[in-house]
Image (cartoon, rainbow, N blue to C red; front, side, top):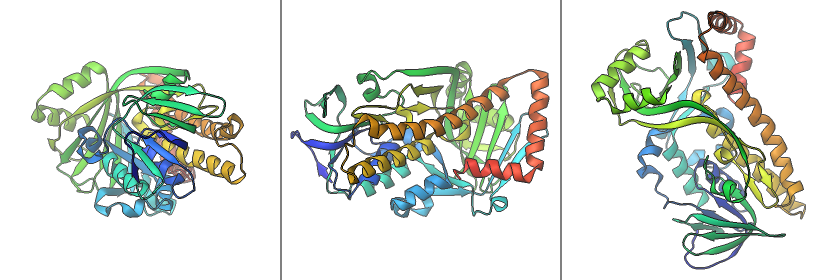
Length: 398
């Protein structure tokens, strides 16, 4: 990997953002005779970030297979990820639940739980083996101009770059998207997600659990230690502020009660962080010379844990389009080239986003008829093995 200082160079692809999605794309493009640069606003120290250490990802088997093909999975310490073999979903104060077991799908597990920081580090280690990769960090993009055959980028350090293709992998507040005047459609859920790591009295037994509460879902995701889970609690902004500000003992008591003691008493908690929730999608994922991937193109509610998986699939699809165009000696940045990426990914992303949004609104309703319908639906799916296994396979990316 080349560390850049004051030199301006022409590139084939410049990736803005070195999170999971941007680094996944970089790994796809390594050793492909492409000049690739990554711009990141921070120096790369993923394991030092409190937010990155608290945030975990629920990876599908499809995402794990992509990472394995990139030789990234092999670089991870098995102590850094946890396979979950079962998944349980239920509604508070109701008896019906939905239970998925990997044994019923013929797989060893349903997916993996991994810290965002650990996956970022594994991707970084793999990406930096590419001697043609140039790193501009810490640097932020402040100006973007698209000419006929190239994009011109100006960084806050004064460095200027030219490239055929700019890829925005810089998150929900994407600077690439904003500077290129690509519009978004966004709906605020009027909810925040609270994240923390907690210790429980009972073993999680490698089971991911989620309860739908009146104000939003609460998920317990199993970590390597059998008595530790990562939680994601969606709630009103006022309630989340209250939960974040209370002392640990009081928080643990409220969390135990909210989770109906499914894992016994919550014994301890880490620090707690929160962030706002919304569903958002760029009206277009591409322009000539520009492509958006991951949260820069779309965000969704965390209740299904699919955000990172959609981003990893975006990166794989865009890489395939770039490499096929290169092989055929076509422009990798042309609108007609990138259109294939947009058509394929927007179709699948909208199916997932629509499904997650529908589930969110379905369980938010207090209408008695809808409540009874929810309970009937959970019981029906749980008792029809073919339907339940089909849902499980789709959720795993199959």
